[in-house]
Image (tube, rainbow, N blue to C red):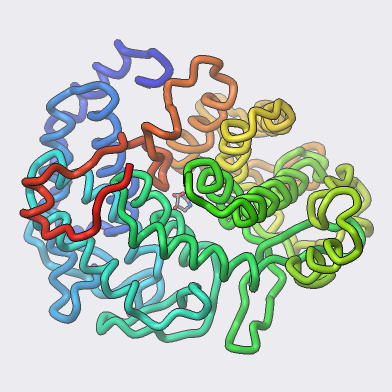
Length: 448
Ligand code: DMJ
């Protein structure tokens, strides 16, 4: 609302939540990850944009109610849920009794900024402790397992940038962008090198670049491209623009990967008769991207690099180089493709990304609008897709926000001043002063 200039509506909304306490009964547990990225991130961002003090008190109240999640009696990985009334922790998680990497490592931006605003070191220390353990944990070429025990060991060799891990990789780069944290930057670069070398493939006929999960030391790909993974091109584009000291070859590689992946994520929308993309597609594997790049370079680097040839949208399902089962052909109103399109537009200035985003906007308006809101759809390859009567909150927080900003010529969010958390709530870049550095035991020099 604030970004759209709806200040009266914003003030009314602040008034209506000013006594929000997150304590309904002593039996209720709040999911740690979702509550952090949505509510804590939302309060902090709205405070940073508007300066409304009550939002900072709400953030501090919620942050202190959730911080007992780290009292897991082992190395301090957070529990899956926490009771905001009494601080009891709940070990049951979306992944049984293990924690997903994304749940462990997607609270750092919010708690570090809260620590900056309140001066409370425990917020910083608890989340940085998780980072310290992750930096020291077993990694496979910079890639992390998806599931973790509370003693800090991983339980699988499943390497993915999809649902179970996505925002952890996002927060490596963004911790650096927000606070100048050099260790996080180093981890980001190491992880991206692993992803580019191991997890990117190209389809055989259309040459679509895609990202997929790999398993075990044999690096077996499952060739599924999740909509959730479509945040990665935007992240790579952001890093390529914001990391001043990237070697030119690395910057080029990240830009190419961003462009090819963002195109594939978009064409998965453009191919469908509704213009909305499936939640998951099984791609046909035509080989590893880095091998194709090497061959292209050896043969004189003529034309566009492999994976960047942007084939036309394809209505014939037999010629698409991917397929999906009917239950995967749902559009769940997710933001990742629009998020990457927005970041491609902001980092390249190429209007083609606005045009692509506009095609998605038109499909949303045409097929998903209802009397009281918008809806997910169950059949994307249809000219009249069926609605499912469901509108997740991330549609407003992320999908529509990125769409709005994509077409805002006066976009107030400058990417070197603001960092979007994983729920699209912008937080302002800051540095730690000498006093904070001493209090929080910060050793690396700030660089931004
Ligand atoms: C959002 O809640 C966040 O972006 C999260 O990190 C993963 N994806 C969902 C929406 O798809």
